[in-house]
Length: 430
Ligand code: 0X9
Ligand code: ZN
Image (cartoon, rainbow, N blue to C red; front, side, top):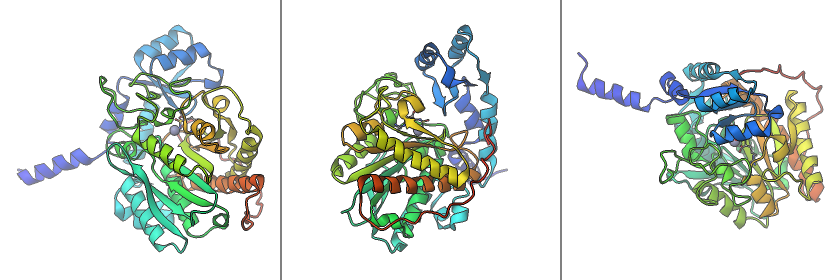
């Protein structure tokens, strides 16, 4: 017979183990995930999906209720049922013991090994602290504030505070797991020394939605929003990328707390977003680049998202976005699309880029959607994603330096290499 202590330990283990096959299946229970041709979808169908509180996965998948599925059938919309594929995809990934690494111990791994698994918040923050402590650059750990649940929005800050400032932030959407891995890698590479430090100061916020990220590790890997409850509703959280005061609750948002694009009870109702606003306001005089890193879809975008219009700085924004996506092609052979949010992915009001551009005048207020065909593609994607995004960041900042006539040492660019063949286009979950 098992001892009481053994039963207690087993119960505890059960309580802390996360993203089990049961948890994965229960996250999809009562829903369908359908594949659609979004670019050719009628406005009527898009409105129908939004009205049914659909959850948009990348560009061509929606997680929807059975009622929404019926409505799609009634509209004679072409779709493919993919729910079981998604469940299998996540079950396979999470069954691999090397898919994730949890805790401060993981932070001590060498680079190859660290970036071969997804890392939890504790590991990412521990690595940031230890790399800053051992860097010979002028660097420090900072925090732009704490989240609703009291976690630090930890930053790596590099530079003397006098140069034009580049603010990169990752993981405002909790489930987009490639993104904090990129911000960590970017900090790590810059802390080792880089010619761009001659021109720019950097602030890199590794996990902007730390509460949501913790929840994706503990309970539901597909969580997107913040974790603040909504009074009067059983649905938790606000979409932090609809919570900025720019066309608040406009196109591509919802006022229903149960929606994945819920704009919130008021602009900046979410602490993690208000902290980003306050960091931007406090540093507006030096801020030249703001990059909000998301996944997935392989896109490089800029304002506007809330309205169908080009900004007066369209030419500069296009030029430096093109430089970034060309560097990605050189690096990996992948072809990213680029352009304004509204026309490149979909209308989205109240997002970071529109607010940083309109309110703070940051011309290079940009956002990227990293590679992959799911929010947690296999961990073998982490290193190639980091390499192509880092190459894009270098090209972006070289372009901004030239456009704005910024001083500083010339940045050596990688020797032109023969363009590698494009990685095979996989339709599903590679
Ligand atoms: O819906 C979003 O917020 C973004 N796509 S995602 O799949 N990552 O959720 C696109 C909106 C454009 N992004 C920014 N304006 N930052
Ligand atoms: Zn996102």
